[in-house]
Image 1 (cartoon, rainbow, N blue to C red):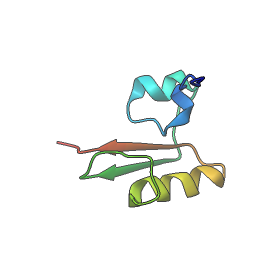
Image 2 (image 1 turned 180 degrees about the horizontal axis):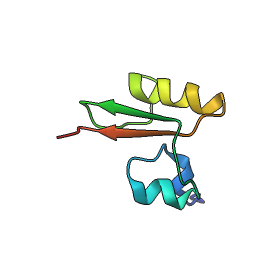
Image 3 (image 1 turned 90 degrees about the horizontal axis):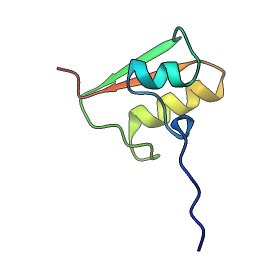
Image 4 (image 1 turned 120 degrees about the vertical axis):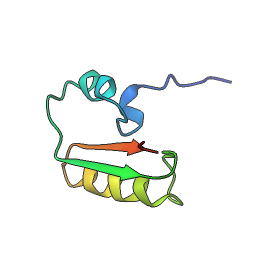
Length: 66
């Protein structure tokens, strides 16, 4: 059984460090969510973020902001 290695680009960034790891210096959209970020179609912020990403926007999610 082989396991693929996960890359930072497998998820939408949730921190400045992850944004910079993608080589981005700015974002088009920042989504704030009161929930944890789970990249799954049953979680609204993930769906919205992935739809925006598919349209070419640079998207990040800030889960559970203080």
